[in-house]
Image (cartoon, rainbow, N blue to C red; front, side, top):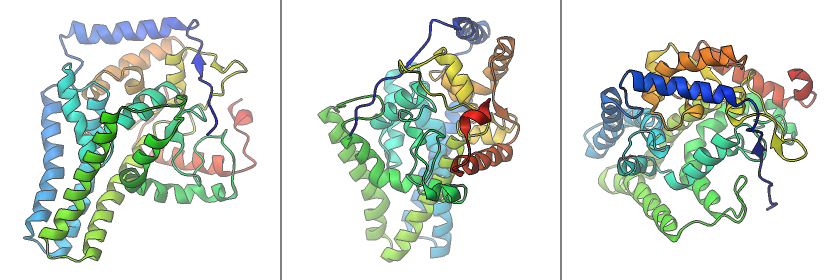
Length: 369
């Protein structure tokens, strides 16, 4: 695998925006005597979402329901799986849920409970994606599948002409790919993002094997042993749960960065992005459906991706409150604050972006001028 040069940012310029927005957000928390971490509503949400996921599993494993009802419960379990990932695992793995690192560590294992690996996620997401957002060759979130082109700077293939149709099917497979392939693949890569010859501690290899084994056991082995079902029934339920969680998680994450308004910057000849990192995050990130309280509750504030990228150590429960502060500051400094009023507007924008990036005649550079 080719060695990738590290991208840097010109943080010597335009520092005033970052300084100002940080001061104002800090003043909001300090002035109101509010912790940046989880509050009671966040704790209640944590209990409810974990109860949905674990409760659905308990109902299925009880064997007290018909096959049709159990199948429906796997659908609900998929909704719970995505919710736990959005609202609990994500905050904990960012160190945003609590000021206590032990609490974050324990809650971070909810990610492993879902069949994913928290350690490798912190590398690919917290470090790589959050630092090199929308930079081709570095941001791993742009590499969903070879037949999906999420960056206008990646190689165009004939199949990309229909990616606006294929993409949503690919998103639905995200959790299945994650559970069986993605984590192992990232562990085995010598170079990942800008990290060359990356090695992982033996303890993390042991954790990977142990937590994956635990997941496969409770989600596949125990139902087969304890329930009067066939392998086909198990496969249908297992697939339903993961397709449900996959499409929800896949779509939500893409609406944050791959829409018409967001940029896909290219480093200069010195491999530098000629703008401050915080401004880079502003122009490559998008919010949506900020007034939809139910959606915001469920996705853990990930419809406020701008606030999340600027303040990843702040618990997602606070994003709606600091959003007006960030937007007002951006307006004062003439910096874009990308957002869509509704969820469906964001989905439509993502769909149009997929069509544009799938068109071999589309010139991204000319279109942005």
